[in-house]
Image (cartoon, rainbow, N blue to C red; front, side):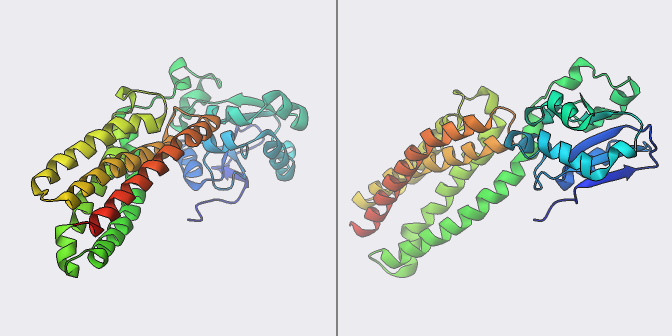
Length: 307
């Protein structure tokens, strides 16, 4: 996962002293997308050390910041390479850069380019002026869909481990034989946990603007409840005793807890939140998620031991 490039000054094409200077993060995808957006262009690219974090996130954390910009300018000797004193920064770097302070420290004027790298050619051709639509960050359903696979793969890895552990525990702790316990009791964990992954990591991002609430955990809660009720309906036909009822109650707590946690995890991929907002939500949501998880597990273990 060492997905970085070395910080410093790079030449794209054959730039000279009058060529524009673009600033980006040392996250490799940010660097590659910037280069790919400028075919046939001669520019300088100044790469800051953002610890391998993309521009927007690094600006929020402070690693794409004024001090790092000034230090990288001094270390690169850019003032001796170009004749002008202008830097083009991504608009999404603005939270981390104090433009007036950057000019005071380095002598270079900060110009904020468009949000998307693909708009840079038009921006440069228009005398470094951005059209109004270049200043708006959209977050359409297709843009959210692109982000789901990363979240889904991570969630499924954890889900497979949890399912395996629950199957093993049900086989060992149940009153009947090992495989009989798994088939009769533990196997229900498979659709239940996959339902929580579906609601939290897939449906919540897809339906994000239409779900109630501002916090991501709150947005995932109604879907988690619907998922739990669906699983309850699926398994109720096989309920034959008190232990089965306890297991159904367990998933009523566990599915929403997992779904809200996974939906909260999507904050890092969204355009809706700030670092302080994420911290506030975690302080409020995690105790409820942990509490529901502990209650659910208590009911689930009780269902193994009670007949």
